[in-house]
Amino acid sequence: MIVSGFDLRLRPVHRYVTVEDYRRAARARLPNFVWAYLDGGAEDLVTLRENRTGFSAWSLRSRVLTGKGKPDLSTTVVGKDIKFPVMLAPTGYTGLAHWEGELSAARAAEAAGTRVVLSTVSSWSIEEIAEATTDDQCFQLYPREGDLTTRLMNRAWQAGYRTLFVTVDVPAVGLREGERRMGMSMPPSLTPSRMLNIACHPLWASRVLRHKRISGRNLVDTGRLRDAVESLAIQTRHVVQSALSWDDFAWMRDQWKGRIYIKGILDPADADKAVSLGADGVVVSNHGGRQLEYAVSSIAALPDVVAAVGSRAEVILDSGIRRGTDVIKALALGAKAVLIGRPYIYGLAVEGQLGVERVLEIFRSEIERTLLLMGVGSVRELDRSWLIPRAGRDEDSDNPSTLFDQAVRPHYRSG
Image 1 (cartoon, rainbow, N blue to C red):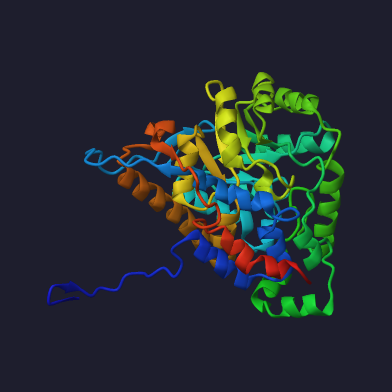
Image 2 (image 1 turned 135 degrees about the vertical axis):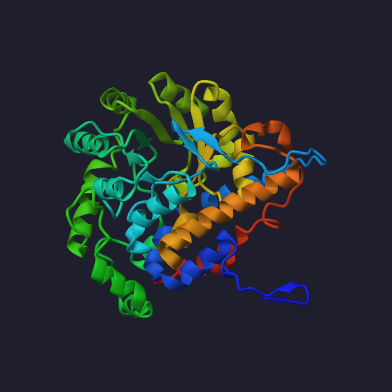
């Protein structure tokens, strides 16, 4: 209806306009032990925090009157044309956030014109995701010569997956103290206060009991609690291996016929070694701050890795990305694309597939708007010249990561 020149037609109003909005909403919907698993990190959370503050080391250059018009966000990565340079990272046991888990994530990614990297310990199987989507997706696996690895690679190939991401930064599980305090184990360590906390989230509990999507479905056949315990035991026996070496990756490179990327690289010498052994690309990642405490932040490690291999292989950034400006800084420093994990899980926990779609749209719109304001016509134009180092910055004064300390850490101090 038009009244006196005003358009009064109803339009959908989104309650959540930033990733942080979805994060706060997700926190309210999930029990403490699940939140500690999904959002926490190792030890004192230093690496987790610096994954965010690291982006504030750079300002963005702005050029006016460029006449560029609407920017082109499309790029090509992992051999695929995607509509904007954001992919969904592999996340384990995603069904804990919402029973639709990776199924909704893959469908949302496809609808947005991008891809998901499916975890070895996903709550939906390799075959289920392949049947539910049209595009071929990517599969994540850990380096291990043996029957289980061979079977998983064969299953992925037969289901149509053509890109393998090999995660290499888990020789041991990081000390995630928040999870221990909240009783996050399989089975969960339940106390009266923890049971009360679960009872305060009846929708979450009813979905878990009804849909049974809390196990690693590539490792076991069903999603019941006892199967979740078994899938975690299998993961511990076959995934967390301190003696893994470059020979294990070389064996996987020989076995896999498609593209292969190593995820978990922080050192340029490791990146160079990976490419020399046949990796098509590397993912600069510290596992979202969940493994080695005081590891260098991913964004800080990125420039040296790009310098080492950028002309010979694709470099992708993972860990700490919450804003479109983060994506732009990563691309300007040489990344071809980024992976997001926690952000899409926040959306999933709140609104299922719609929430994942909305989070991806938030990133897409933020990237587009920022490029317009910078005067950049395409993500392919981004390079180091678009960044200005910020001298004398106060890392905690201008970064939303401080919200973690203010709102979340108190919840990790007791069960």
